[in-house]
Length: 406
Ligand SMILES: Cc1cc2nc3c(=O)[nH]c(=O)nc-3n(C[C@H](O)[C@H](O)[C@H](O)COP(=O)(O)OP(=O)(O)OC[C@H]3O[C@@H](n4cnc5c(N)ncnc54)[C@H](O)[C@@H]3O)c2cc1C
Ligand code: SF4
Ligand code: SF4
Ligand code: SF4
Image (cartoon, rainbow, N blue to C red; front, side):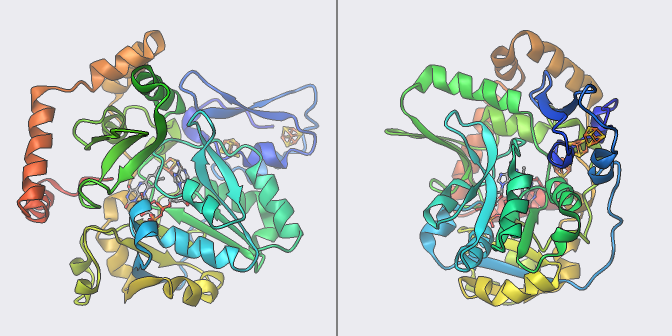
């Protein structure tokens, strides 16, 4: 049976809970809000299935395979505005819904907790669009995917690379089904649901009845290149950039990620899924044909890993402006986020969590305060943007300090 002694060795995918034949496993939150399997030893029959499906205990070796790569920008301006990058996810999802299929993705519950759920109509895809930089609760989704596949329906599962590997292990032979598609992302890391809850509490105290949505990467103010965190309210929505928004700062400071993210085993080029999606900040790095894209509307980079993915590709491409690029180039210009786990500053990590256990909301305020420096940085960015210098400044920053991840 599964026993978690080292938290870095559990990514919380829920495959073990889903496979257990006697329902002996419950996914239970720890003090950081991350879910871990808890086994009822009275019920457990020691069948070993939980260990066999675990993507960390029983990893899938990386196998080189043929790949294609594309840059895509959805043709529908509303979908594009709503999506994190170029809306490739929605194009794949629509291709599945057109076949009477079901799409699984990460959305919110009624209290803005990040959860995985499924959609069977186009309108419901809205809930999945836009990255949520928080680990999602997979609930019963893996078993639901299996149920729909057994009914013969097309299924798209969209999630992080560790969720994709957990699902493939859980499905076993069924993971080869012609009517299954899995789409993952290049994954910076997933922060703590408890830290997210503390941020929600802070916002609710200020705007309790008027909050309609939280959007981690909103393009409404300055477009894709300087996307903002948005607290969407019935009036006067609040927009904050990467330098002032508390939660984005927590995300990029890597102080509250799931322990497994600091030694992530799922960062690689050759993956078990059908599509990998991630950002493209500068199309001209990849193609001479970059002028066909609006650079500030968002572009998705996409790797196609499988025959299943190639089969549905024409349906995806027809919804988008696109260019085929070299897979080597696609991964070359994102080597850090594609291949290396996020760094951990042990001292800051310890201090953050010590403080958080006493006073969650105060910790966010103390660790990520709005100071003169952050306000000046935000102002300079806005000026650079309004004077059309933003891409130039960003390019220079990247040249001297490296890519800032989103
Ligand atoms: C936690 C996280 C970290 C990321 N890190 C990077 C990075 O370092 N570099 C980079 O280039 N791109 C990163 N991305 C990917 C990027 O933000 C976009 O999701 C990607 O470009 C696809 O955009 P899109 O416009 O096609 O789809 P979108 O419309 O953005 O669709 C988002 C898709 O992501 C899924 N999703 C959203 N939140 C979660 C979540 N918490 N867990 C699992 N699935 C989720 C949704 O189900 C949906 O399918 C990350 C995404 C997430 C969720
Ligand atoms: S060993 Fe078998 S019965 Fe026991 S928890 Fe694991 S899957 Fe369940
Ligand atoms: S990584 Fe997934 S399968 Fe392994 S113990 Fe954690 S939740 Fe279970
Ligand atoms: S960084 Fe790795 S372990 Fe963490 S959520 Fe992403 S894929 Fe999973």
